Length: 141
Image 1 (tube, rainbow, N blue to C red):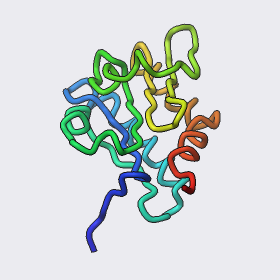
Image 2 (image 1 turned 135 degrees about the horizontal axis):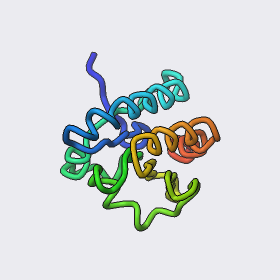
Image 3 (image 1 turned 180 degrees about the vertical axis):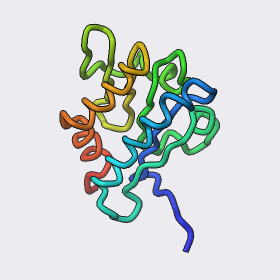
Image 4 (image 1 turned 30 degrees about the vertical axis):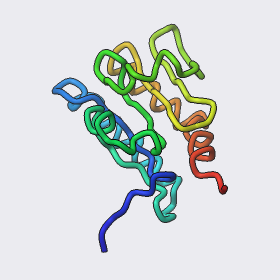
């Protein structure tokens, strides 16, 4: 049985491509993927998948997937595409940023360095931002 990705419920977790984001942000993305999968509790299609910014920006159906960008606009082209339009939901001393679209379809989690990015993801999960994001993504129509 092959795995499928539901456009409405598979959450893409997007990291930048290249050595720095692969080394620093991909492990953080997999931590977030585990949190998404735990919340999805095995429901069909309710899962996280880690992809690169190159993949999502070149995928014709990308706009239909809920997506969370990990890493700042300097290392993640998807964040660079989103961050100016996404409202800042949380920030701390201009060192870390949690940005979430009001419709819950897009989010960007990043810091001025890897420590800030990791902290942004941890706060996103621990302070209920992930829960609210997934509630919007996974609401019943």
